[in-house]
Image (cartoon, one colour):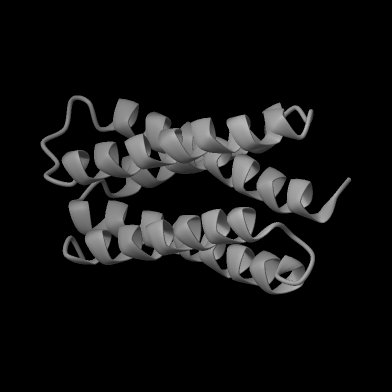
Amino acid sequence: MKPQNELLMHIYKDCDMSITTLEKLLKELVEKDNKIKDAIEDILKSYEQFLKDTKKRLHKEHVEGESNGLFTKMMANMGVAKEVKNDNSDASMADMLIKGITMGTLDMEKKIKQYKESVDKKDLKFANEFLEFQQQSIEKLKKYL
């Protein structure tokens, strides 16, 4: 696989996993009175847009995006359900999301460094925009801590 496709596939999988997790979290919080819901919905919409844009970029390369495995998604959903059951406060939900997104930003930074010399400048710019979105999401969630 070409380096730019590997970089885009990483973004695709990150978005796919994040969307699954955020949708599950919103379902778990549906009957609860959390102020963080709007922030989660905004972040979810952005992940969905990045996924859509990544699909287009991969399609141009004649590559089909690969979702995370069912087992991985199941484990994430179980983790979200457990966290909400233990403590569904805004601070706890923000903490959980910040930790998850931070792992994603670290992975993204590594991928950008790994591929910065070998990928198309447009794809590198896109990857940096995705990284910036993740960092902004963390800042948005910090106010709930």
